[in-house]
Image 1: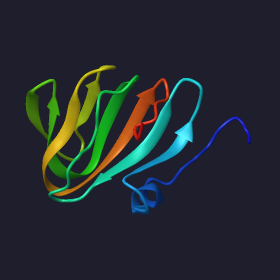
Image 2: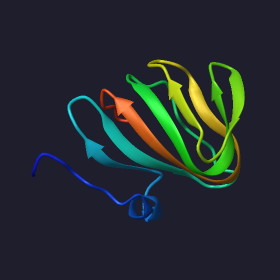
Image 3: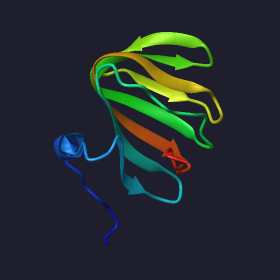
Length: 108
């Protein structure tokens, strides 16, 4: 591997083989695409890393420590390590670019 990696966002978004598809892992961060269908339930739990969400498509509410706010394309949200959070009221298929720093295993 060289000193960079390049990805096509369209291809990453098209892979719906699993709800969270990590595509990059480095010592200081990891990135993946999270898919949640309309009406889907988000099983997230507090993580051991800080998280950044960039909403690429869809609409939902994000609940963080009991506070709920609407998210849609273009919304960027940072969630602190250990904070209780989840997407709720998914009204349009949600696709979110997720950045963990440092890397985390969201399925654990």
